[in-house]
Length: 123
Image (cartoon, rainbow, N blue to C red):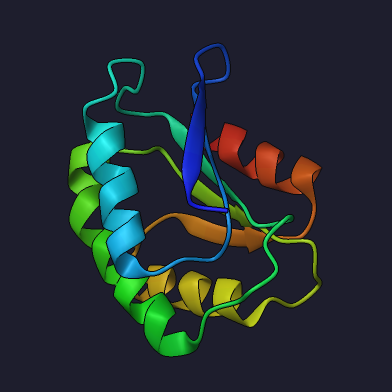
């Protein structure tokens, strides 16, 4: 299942779904998002991994986070949450740690309610 997104204008939220993927897929997704007239600066991002089944390795996460870092100033999200179905998702934890290093407001959660509460705090 490739990366895809939906935009909830009322919640000012972009939800990214699909399987774990590589940096080139993320670059393509972000490029599409930049041209989507419904998206606006300040929207929160939720990466929903609950249906994903094929985790990526740490090297791939590093490459993905490089793409995220490059697109962050253009997309201008308020915050981003990574939602997993597991207590510990190694890929999500690596992304969380790299985001901390870059001072990007990205956090990993295994509870939808907690992720949404944290995203709303960033409004």
